[in-house]
Length: 136
Image 1 (spheres, rainbow, N blue to C red):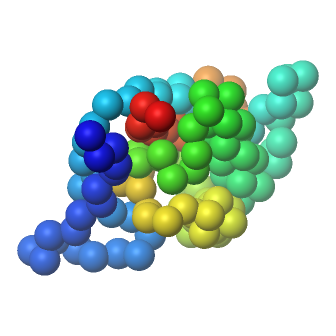
Image 2: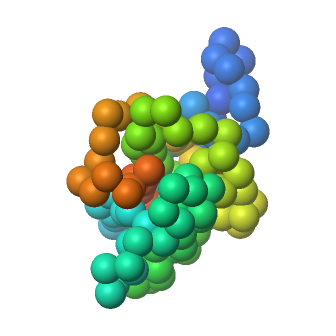
Protein backbone atom coordinates (compact mmCIF):
# COMPACT_ATOMS: atom_id res chain seq x y z
CA UNK A 1 0.00 0.00 0.00
CA UNK A 2 1.24 3.50 -0.78
CA UNK A 3 1.57 5.25 2.60
CA UNK A 4 1.49 9.01 2.59
CA UNK A 5 -0.07 12.24 3.76
CA UNK A 6 -1.98 14.21 1.12
CA UNK A 7 -2.19 17.95 1.70
CA UNK A 8 -4.97 19.75 -0.17
CA UNK A 9 -6.33 23.25 -0.61
CA UNK A 10 -9.66 23.46 -2.47
CA UNK A 11 -9.95 26.40 -4.85
CA UNK A 12 -12.99 27.63 -2.88
CA UNK A 13 -10.94 28.03 0.34
CA UNK A 14 -8.18 30.44 1.31
CA UNK A 15 -4.76 29.43 0.00
CA UNK A 16 -1.96 30.40 2.36
CA UNK A 17 1.68 29.26 2.17
CA UNK A 18 1.80 28.99 5.97
CA UNK A 19 -0.81 26.24 6.33
CA UNK A 20 -2.85 23.67 4.44
CA UNK A 21 -6.63 23.38 4.67
CA UNK A 22 -6.84 19.57 4.55
CA UNK A 23 -4.53 16.66 5.35
CA UNK A 24 -5.52 13.06 4.66
CA UNK A 25 -3.42 10.13 5.86
CA UNK A 26 -3.43 7.00 3.73
CA UNK A 27 -1.95 3.58 4.29
CA UNK A 28 -0.76 1.51 7.19
CA UNK A 29 1.09 3.19 9.99
CA UNK A 30 0.86 4.87 13.34
CA UNK A 31 -0.77 8.15 14.24
CA UNK A 32 1.34 10.01 16.78
CA UNK A 33 -0.34 12.49 19.14
CA UNK A 34 2.08 14.87 20.86
CA UNK A 35 0.57 16.54 23.90
CA UNK A 36 0.72 20.29 24.40
CA UNK A 37 4.35 21.40 24.56
CA UNK A 38 5.53 24.46 26.44
CA UNK A 39 8.86 26.31 26.50
CA UNK A 40 10.21 24.35 29.43
CA UNK A 41 13.32 22.19 29.71
CA UNK A 42 13.45 18.76 31.30
CA UNK A 43 15.02 20.56 34.30
CA UNK A 44 11.96 22.84 34.64
CA UNK A 45 13.67 25.96 33.27
CA UNK A 46 11.25 28.18 31.33
CA UNK A 47 12.82 29.40 28.09
CA UNK A 48 12.04 32.86 26.72
CA UNK A 49 10.04 34.34 29.58
CA UNK A 50 8.04 37.23 28.12
CA UNK A 51 9.12 36.39 24.54
CA UNK A 52 6.58 34.48 22.43
CA UNK A 53 9.03 34.24 19.52
CA UNK A 54 11.65 32.41 21.62
CA UNK A 55 9.03 30.25 23.30
CA UNK A 56 7.54 29.19 19.96
CA UNK A 57 10.95 28.25 18.57
CA UNK A 58 11.79 26.20 21.67
CA UNK A 59 8.43 24.43 21.67
CA UNK A 60 8.87 23.39 18.05
CA UNK A 61 12.30 21.97 18.93
CA UNK A 62 10.55 19.91 21.63
CA UNK A 63 8.06 18.66 19.03
CA UNK A 64 10.95 17.67 16.77
CA UNK A 65 12.51 15.73 19.69
CA UNK A 66 9.20 13.94 20.29
CA UNK A 67 8.90 13.03 16.60
CA UNK A 68 12.48 11.71 16.54
CA UNK A 69 11.76 9.64 19.65
CA UNK A 70 8.91 7.97 17.73
CA UNK A 71 11.16 7.33 14.69
CA UNK A 72 9.06 9.87 12.79
CA UNK A 73 10.30 12.51 10.38
CA UNK A 74 9.25 16.15 10.27
CA UNK A 75 7.36 15.41 7.06
CA UNK A 76 5.21 12.94 9.02
CA UNK A 77 3.76 15.94 10.88
CA UNK A 78 0.40 17.07 9.53
CA UNK A 79 -1.48 18.94 12.29
CA UNK A 80 -0.58 21.63 14.81
CA UNK A 81 -2.93 23.18 17.35
CA UNK A 82 -1.50 26.39 18.77
CA UNK A 83 -2.82 27.94 21.97
CA UNK A 84 -1.79 31.59 22.31
CA UNK A 85 -2.31 33.63 25.46
CA UNK A 86 -4.61 36.57 24.87
CA UNK A 87 -2.72 39.81 24.22
CA UNK A 88 0.34 38.14 22.67
CA UNK A 89 1.51 39.21 19.22
CA UNK A 90 0.68 36.24 16.99
CA UNK A 91 3.04 37.57 14.30
CA UNK A 92 5.98 37.32 16.71
CA UNK A 93 5.04 33.72 17.43
CA UNK A 94 4.88 33.02 13.70
CA UNK A 95 8.38 34.50 13.35
CA UNK A 96 9.58 31.99 15.94
CA UNK A 97 8.14 29.15 13.86
CA UNK A 98 9.83 30.06 10.57
CA UNK A 99 12.97 27.93 10.93
CA UNK A 100 10.84 24.90 11.83
CA UNK A 101 8.25 25.42 9.09
CA UNK A 102 10.98 25.80 6.43
CA UNK A 103 12.06 22.21 7.17
CA UNK A 104 8.65 20.83 6.16
CA UNK A 105 7.85 19.77 2.58
CA UNK A 106 4.21 20.80 3.07
CA UNK A 107 2.70 23.26 5.53
CA UNK A 108 0.62 21.40 8.12
CA UNK A 109 -3.02 21.89 8.96
CA UNK A 110 -3.00 24.51 11.75
CA UNK A 111 -5.58 25.67 14.26
CA UNK A 112 -4.83 28.76 16.36
CA UNK A 113 -6.75 29.37 19.58
CA UNK A 114 -6.56 32.47 21.78
CA UNK A 115 -6.82 31.51 25.46
CA UNK A 116 -7.02 33.45 28.73
CA UNK A 117 -4.02 31.57 30.15
CA UNK A 118 -2.04 28.34 30.25
CA UNK A 119 -0.84 26.04 33.06
CA UNK A 120 1.92 28.46 34.11
CA UNK A 121 1.57 32.26 33.86
CA UNK A 122 5.01 32.42 32.18
CA UNK A 123 3.80 30.24 29.28
CA UNK A 124 2.76 32.43 26.36
CA UNK A 125 2.07 29.67 23.86
CA UNK A 126 1.44 25.92 23.84
CA UNK A 127 1.52 23.66 20.79
CA UNK A 128 0.23 20.13 20.28
CA UNK A 129 0.96 18.08 17.19
CA UNK A 130 -0.26 15.08 15.24
CA UNK A 131 1.88 13.04 12.87
CA UNK A 132 1.39 9.91 10.78
CA UNK A 133 4.34 7.52 10.56
CA UNK A 134 3.85 4.97 7.80
CA UNK A 135 4.85 1.37 8.40
CA UNK A 136 8.17 0.48 6.79
